[in-house]
Length: 212
Image 1 (cartoon, rainbow, N blue to C red):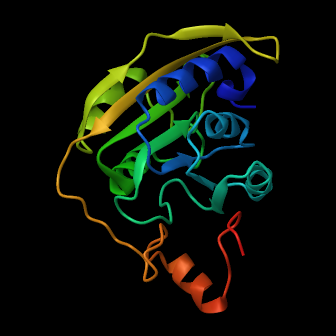
Image 2 (image 1 turned 90 degrees about the horizontal axis):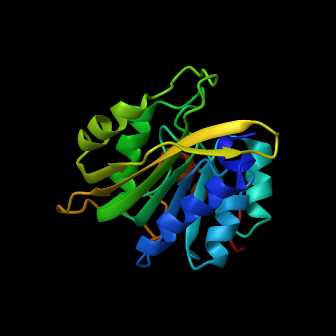
C-alpha cells in the first residue's frame, strides 16, 4: 500500500493544494494506483483527467472509476507535447521502476508553459527503494527541467490505516512560460504519435477507458 493511500489526512491535504490552484484544463496523473484519490479529485472539479498506470490490474480498477487511463511507463508517457495544465505524481517517485529525472522530463514535455506539477512522496525512514530521491534534491532536479517557484513542504506526519506512523512531504512547481511544442495526433486528439498508439490506430484498438 502506498503512503498516500494509507493515510487519509495526507490525501486530503494533497488534494487541497491541487484544487485551490486548478484553473481548468486537462490533468495527467502518473501512477494512480487503484484510483481512489483521483476519483475524489474528479468529483471536486478536475473532470478532464487522464492517467498512465504501470500495472495491468490497477489499470482496470482506475477505468472503473471513470478515469481515462492507458497502461504504460511513467518514464515515457504516451501523450502529446504541451497538452496538460496539471501533472500529478501521487507517491510514485520512489517506486522501483521509476527514474525521477526521466519522469520530470516527461512532465515538462506534456505540460503547457505555466502548467503546474504536484508531487507527494514518502519520507518514512524505513522505506528503502532503489530510486529514492532525497528531499533536498527535488528543487535542483525540477529547476533543471525549467520548473520555477519550486516549493517543498515541511514533513507531514500521520497514522495510517495499517496502524503505523507515516511521514510525507509535498512538492509543487510551475513550468516556465515559453513557446509550447504541441505534437497532436492526426485527429488532433490528446494522444500523440507514440509508436504504441500509431500501432493501436492501425489495428483499430482503443484507449482503455475511452468511449467506443
